[in-house]
Picture 1 (tube, one colour):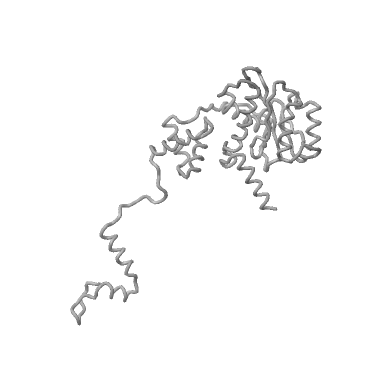
Picture 2 (tube, rainbow, N blue to C red):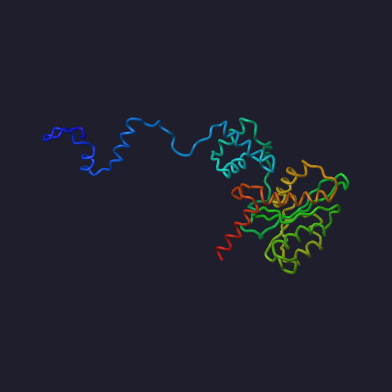
Length: 297
């Protein structure tokens, strides 16, 4: 239209006059003309997709930087998201499988039914705690026992203790640590409303243990006999403790092991991420619950 000759002047109308009459922006016309003269190659819409080679390098970096070993593809995928590296979870699994980066895993075994049904996960912190003991060895002191306590909601370790002679009063030490840390002091009724999950071991069923937890307001919640699933939270914590510390290090004596356990408790609470917590750490989950309670109040 701009090249059409005027009947009176015998000259083209021109771009400026035509665009002004049509009520258009001159920049839009010139932008459209540039696109026609030099069309852009088609591009895939959405975020940039890493190639498999680049994704493998990112995965290797995540594995090398992690303070833990043997983490599965789900946690690798979550740590990639923390680094703002986006990839489909199934694609991360495929790439890790192709490059032999998956951690060893046991195949599920068919088991008969058991009386434990339902969930042992609490809805909020300080509703249900779990405690148990496990054994390890040191070079000078031989076999020793580790007692620990864990929160069934946030999965954070709230008490840990190692001792040569495992008796009922030593089994109470992680509970004392948890009560002092969560409620400020170890006094009568301080932990009222909290249930304590334990097995039927002699140290836990003894009168001294039961009387002391009753003194601080804890309600005993024993697991089913011969059903460790009922105390599964602390059992899973002990598996992590063994895989990440006890089975990969040698300890000279009880003092060295005690220092390592305190350091591991801090690392576990601050850095270990769990799928059931939305791939958050136990410490993050507890802080988020505290923030939600403060906002609700």
